[in-house]
Amino acid sequence: MKLDITKVTPFVGLDTINGYKVRATEALKTLEEGTCPGNDFLGWLHLPSSITPQFLAEVKAAAQTLREECDAVVVAGIGGSYLGAKAVIEALSNSFQWLLNDGKNPVILFAGNNIGEDYLYELTTYLKGKKFGVINISKSGTTTETALAFRLLKKQCEEQRGKETAKKVIVAITDAKRGAARTCADKEGYKSFIIPDNVGGRFSVLTPVGLLPIAVAGFDIEQLVKGAQDMEKDATLAAEYAATRYALYQTGKKIEILANYQPKLHFIAEWWKQLYGESEGKDNKGIYPASVDLTTDLHSMGQWIQEGERTIFETVISVENPEHKLLFPSDEENLDGLNFLAGKRVDEVNKMAELGTQLAHVDGGVPNLRVSIERLDAYNLGQLIYFFELGCGLYCQLLGVNAFNQPGVEAYKKNMFALLGKPGYEKETAEIKARLS
Ligand code: PA5
Image (cartoon, rainbow, N blue to C red; front, side):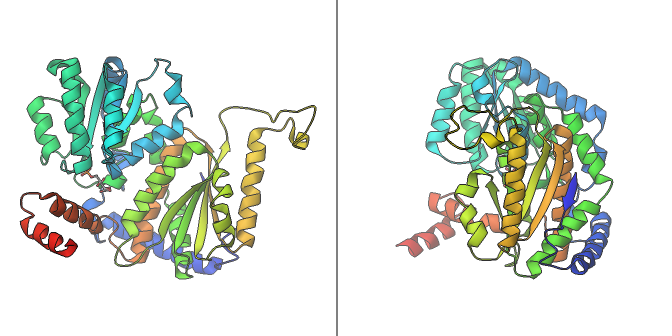
C-alpha cells in the first residue's frame, strides 16, 4: 500500500505536515500506553496480531455450517455491526453476484440497518420458502433497528425450518455477558461469538462481526487478517495520513471526500465515513467525511468539487491492477470519435480519468491525497482497513477528541423512544409532546 501526499504540498508545506507527523507518532505512544481518552476501547490497536489460527478456524467452521445449511444468510446489524462486513463483501464480490445465482455461495443479505417497512416486507417475502440463516450482530444487544429485524427473521426462520434447524443456522455475535442478544443466544443455544469489551463497533471488522459474514460469503479471512497484521507492524503511513488531514483541517479544509474509481469500493467509503465521522465529529470539531464514486459522480458532484466552496480536500483510493482484462473496442463507423482508444485497456482509460481529475481538482484548489493498493483482494483490504483505523486513532489524538465514544448518537434515540412512549421515558414523552403541540 502506498500513500502519496505530493499533491497536498502546494497547499500545506511539508515542514508543517512533518511537524504534525512527529506529534502523530508521539500520539501512538498514548494509544500504546492507554493514556488517551476512551482508553477502555483500545482493543483494536493490536487486534490483528492477537488473532490466532485456532480462532480463525472456529470462525471458518461456523461459516461452513451456514454455507452448507443455507441458500441465503441475512446479516442483521447496524453501524459498526454492519458496515465492515458489507464493505469487504461488496469489494470482493462479482459486481453482479446477486444475479449470478450459481449456487456456489449463499446469497448474503443485510437487515437491521434501517426501519424501512417496505425493505423488511420485501426481504421477508424474498425469504419465503428459502433455506435461510441469520447472523445477529449487536454489541449492546438493544439496538432497535437490529432487534426489530431479528424478531422478524427469527420467527420466520423457526416457522420455515423448524426450531431445531433454526438453532443451527442462527448465530449471535454480541457481548460476552450483557444484552438481549446474549440472553437470547444462551437461552436458545445458538452458536455465538463475543465482541470484545474493548473493541468499539466501528473498529470491529476484524472481530467475528466482520470475519464471520465475510467467511460465509466465501472470502479468505486469513489473508484479510494477514494484511492487517502486516500493516500493524509499521505506523508510518497512518501517521502521515493523520498528520496530513490535521494540517489540512488547520488551513480550513473541513470536508474530506473519499473518492474511488471502482464501483466495488462504494461501501468501503461508507465504512470509512462511519469510522471517521463517529470518531472525530464531537465537541463541535472534526472533518466531515464525504464520498464519491468516480467517474460516475464527476457527472454530478464533479461540478461542486471543481468550483464550489474551497473547504474540501480529496483522498483517492486507487487500485493499481484490475482483476480482469478488457480492451476498448474498435468501431468501423467511429461515430463517437473514440477509435483512438481502440485496443487500450479499459483500466488505462480509467487511470487517465483518475490522473486528469486529480490534476484538475488540484488546479481548482482541492488538495489531493492518493492511497493506492496493488489489487482488490482480501490481503490489500486488510491493509487498508488497519491503515484507516490507525490513521483515525492517531488523528483524533491530534484533534484532541475521544475517538472511541459516540455520545451524539443517543439524541435521536431519546426522542424516538419518547415519541413512541417507551416505558421509563414518561417525562421525555410529556416534554416532547408539549414541544410539538
Ligand atoms: O461504532 C459504533 O459503536 C456504533 O456504530 C455501533 O456499532 C452501532 O450503533 C450498533 O451498535 P450495536 O452493535 O450495539 O447494536
